[in-house]
Image (cartoon, rainbow, N blue to C red; front, side, top):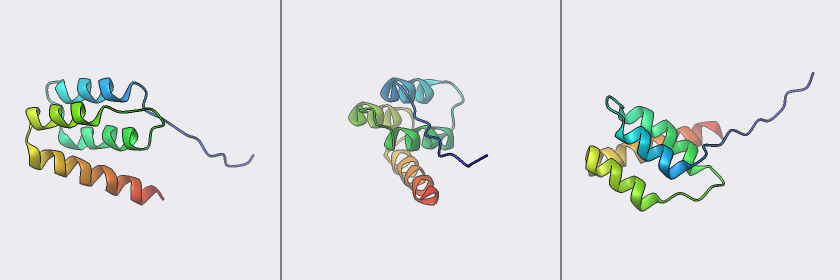
Length: 78
């Protein structure tokens, strides 16, 4: 049995992120995971809409926190 590379993508990225952001009790760390999946997805993402939802839910500093954490996750996987 050989090891195989598996690609997992988030589908409907923009709407999925907005749904996650709007769910009661959602933590920024959970959004960062979904954000990371969206960053590497082959699907187009409406980043202005997603980022606006994050800012409206939390703040600009929360958006920066989520982006930083998402990119760090991506870099760690390389």
